[in-house]
Length: 413
Image 1 (tube, rainbow, N blue to C red):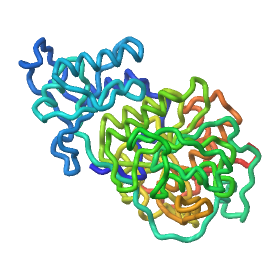
Image 2 (tube, rainbow, N blue to C red):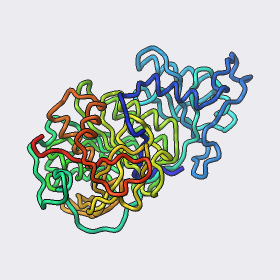
Image 3 (tube, rainbow, N blue to C red):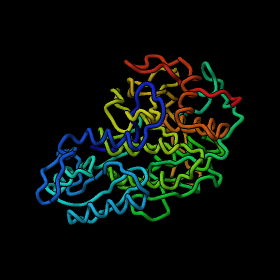
Image 4 (cartoon, rainbow, N blue to C red):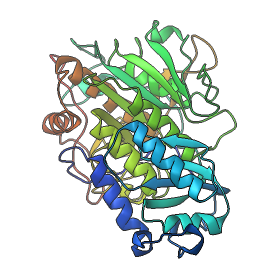
């Protein structure tokens, strides 16, 4: 399945952060009874369930392995992964200890199926290609809809700017030298090749960053924008690459640091990605994701159906749900997503105008950053609850099962 730029899982109401243990429990149930089989000898083990083994966009010979949760430190997790891999004669490509307890590995399908039946393993998923979300036709548009209860006023008024908040942009990187960032954008991690700088060469990440925190185009104009690059110029990416980026984000998120993350991808359902996103929220990061641009249920894509993430649909300038925006009970809130102008990657002054739910979600991330700037100890659940409580019931034709919530934040906050 491709990972596109625009959806994440969530139910209509997301109460509280999912714990790592709960996420892994769900993964264990998804893996089926074979994963619980008790075996002493890897050579004699019965085969387990290999998720997405026949996926059309699978990466042959590459797998994502999630272990069942156990007590112990990050070092203990690494030791457990190493010992498990050695029993099967494997050498992990990446070991994850933060967003997930697991690893990625290259091996044969028979070995992967044996690994899936190991009692220490929750899930083995076929790695697959991922890609950025699509966009809609262009035209100018700006921020003033989200600071007015009704209609457009021609201005964007604000008193807070997200000072002290970190905003992770999990996307294609950021053109950090762009004039609209004013030195507030920094390189964080490049999951494509593991080396910095995490330069943007497609524009999607720079555009999202500009909407979150640019001085001209952004909602929270004083956040620190952190580039977490999970897509390269050639596109698409892979599931394991995306998890690498999220794992780095969780590992490097200081305890108590108010933070948001805009994860601009979507894919068909994947238990490993959903668990990684849920665990990022459990770590205290308010996560926004696009609902998708397929005029279908957001529940059908990852990570849009993750209950604790904020899944965002798109509205037009007249407050109608965009005809292409996904909808349904896994969507949490709508935001303007038509003809959004923001920073672009091609020069330090370039701009681009795009439409799509992946251009609506960064608006919600920016508003969440402003809320956290004034309430730095709030949890993701408290931020979400506040946004839901002040949202405008102004969306026309929100779609079956969708909440009628249009993003709003008082200029006084």
